[in-house]
Length: 257
View 1 (cartoon, rainbow, N blue to C red):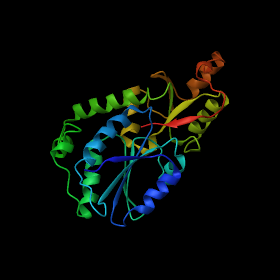
View 2: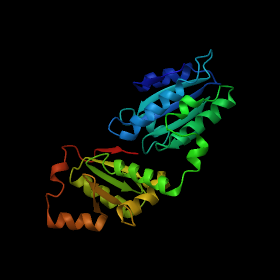
View 3: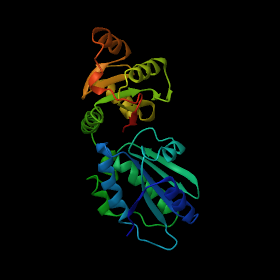
């Protein structure tokens, strides 16, 4: 059975990719050690990998990449949040899956692995998310909302200071997000961020979850502070508002999912 290999360096990545047959489906899982959904996704992928036999040449190759430590690789595939899955064959990106939906991940892998003649996964992989694909697709709206809110509850606590913004700190997609990033950097705040443009489910769901209709949103210790105006107001009332979260090197950030 196949297993997941952890890529430890850029050189390791390049060596592994160059060793693959053009027909091999390369399954790349980008993760971050602090993000709880990544641990869940690792279990799902490990279960899926075990259903694919080792062949010669390999029909599939499974690797895991720390999105923060190996940012050169992350940037190549536009990884803005984790977990993030990239399916590659012969150097071509076939599909990407952002987020922690086991059903979407399983379906994507099965679709592209089957095209290379690899067997589809059986019921053992289905057990990783507790449902078969048809049931999951037909789940009632109330349950779907409950699961989304659980994910959002974990997401807002992914880092002590979490910024939900349009774009990324290096490439903000709106003026308000750009200003809030600047404020965090000026105050040397270590913060996690989530690009809401990369996941519409989070973008729409967080508005209801937070009872706050606009972005950016800043969360501290799992509690909503608010948008740009509220953050400015907090700082005007208390210059040390971010003191407990400041670091020596400005602008250190981490991506979340």
